[in-house]
Image (cartoon, rainbow, N blue to C red):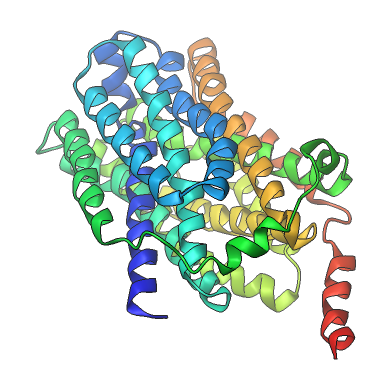
Length: 402
């Protein structure tokens, strides 16, 4: 790719890095936030949930606007809104204002994700788009690594509110970099996309395979956020880990996720289908839930590796499957629906897990619910899921054109 294309990829990936950092920034400090606002764990968990809810609500509108208008302009609006709301969130002592601000931050993140993908797709050739999106997803993992591991370690020296402010002001130079981002694309792909009119959402939802894919997304993200959102609190408040020790556990989990992602892609490509990889990842997550339920922190670092590997092997194939389960012309609609369902599940999980902890007073109930979620996900994965007919049609297309 050209230098300009690589600049766009790295630039958008850095934005994705900051967005995911803000998404998970409250997780290591739920105990501190609970004490600051004088609320229970259910309310503190809501700070995670409302961000994901805002992201889910605005995701499809953001993608539609990115197709209809300039993705560049939407990203600028998203960055400005994210920066202002995150700065105020870092300084407020009002829980209800914090909830509103986290919702706005989630909505802003939606304006960064879909338009960001659109911007990369506009400037990069199709044969290099996999590499481009791979860099983007790697940046997301690094963002979670920053807030889930580096921030807890730094919090021994710097107050967590100052860490939030530093992260907020990192958005400012990104805004200035937009001065060198090209205003227009070549327009070729945009003209092609205008001729593609996907079916309505109601028509897509009648597809049995899409229904199962939505079930896979819902229960997968519901269970996943049991680990991402509650593991730090579990280690710190229930088992007596320090923030720094908790940070190391989460670091191992995130690093395992980053390294396992390309392996899952190569494995599914080698098999020529995604379901087996998706099934293996779901089983790894179920085993991790059962392990924590029965054995607590025994061999916790090994468990962290298994969880990180399970995340990569169960989530990446799901996204690939969404692009292949239907014709490529309507894959974008399927991805947007699937991602929205997954984010709604993530948002619900914050309140559900917090409420269960407040009622039962232990984390075993959380791991039990995670286990049930992943078992249901495995059930949705069983049976015919791949769209082999589309693959056969694609394989015949070159011959037909000769």
